[in-house]
Image 1 (spheres, helix red, strand yellow):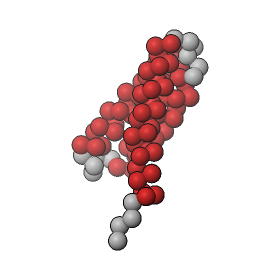
Image 2: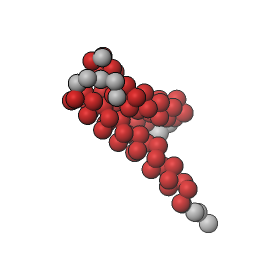
Image 3: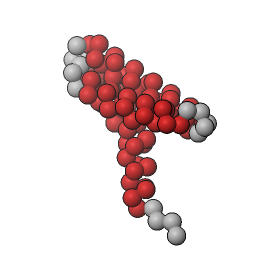
Image 4: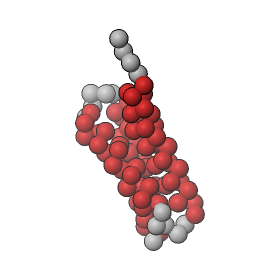
Amino acid sequence: MRKSGIISVAAFLISLIIYAAWFLNADLFSKSAMILVVALPIIGIITAFFTNSKTLKTVGLLGNSLLFLWAVVIPLASTLFWNTP
């Protein structure tokens, strides 16, 4: 089950690169980039639970969770509480 840890870390790195490229140039590939940035951390979190390596599990869970928090949860929470007149 070591491959699931590698998949989890790879999902984190790929989604981090995509999010950084989208963040620096918002017109790059907006909708498809955000779909990948949401889907890959979810896949990474799920696959991190199935690995035996403690290091890969930690990197996979922390990295994917923080990226999911930064790319999904914070923008969603800010749209719920942000009122523009």
